[in-house]
Length: 301
Image 1: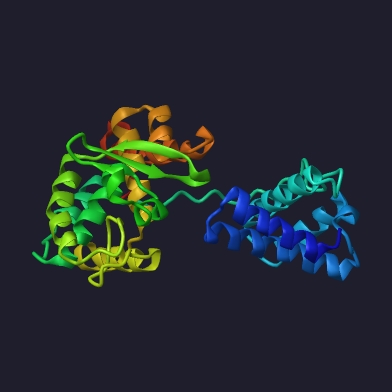
Image 2 (image 1 turned 180 degrees about the vertical axis):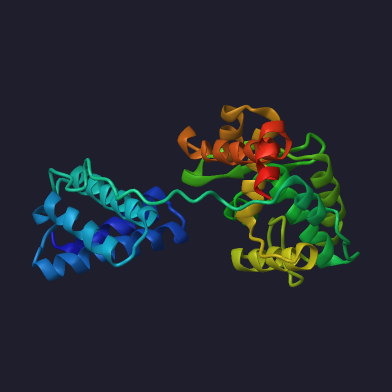
């Protein structure tokens, strides 16, 4: 099957049957267009002609051009997804990306706020108006429940159960999970929802603009960034609040499996990044408190 025709059919499959988000679909498209560009240069005309040595060369070329290890791993994952579809449809009987992995890159730990900085952000002054209460409710919910940006943006009223202190979200792969909502977040939402009702909402979205329309991801990112500058004097993004939630939960509970469930990670390996963050915290405490560590520092100064 010709490259372009197969891609069109695959993207239609992702839209209609898999119902992936537009953002995810754009990511698949960017990755697979890199593959088709390479195929054009190598005169590979059909997906059945693409072999493992081609894919290894493609990955090596992209690595030399500066594509990160994480991006290369995503490209391989996108290619495997395409070949699963092609094999199911009978267009191919192999997967040239099977068994291949991206070059290992330096593992960067996510940036987060320590507990004091998180409290400084959330306990700052709140303007007693529509935007002030809405933004406070968003910040509190991000930190209280560890929501992804897409989960907060997609949140509808019927997913909130404030008396029970629960929220149901649709995570990656359209998987639902129920999360606790802390007292401060419940209070912020209870202050926000009456103001929301006055704005003639266009739908059931929890977070809306003053025109009554659901807030988009870019608008939420902007409001979080502005709150970070205003209250902390630093750059802040929604995922930093999710990282902070996860790290603080793990630091307090030492229960990695529960933190995995709260975050909605399919693989506990993804959650284990927070054990490294927790170790960094413990190492810092050790350096500051241990007599021998302090003695060494004193002798060096």
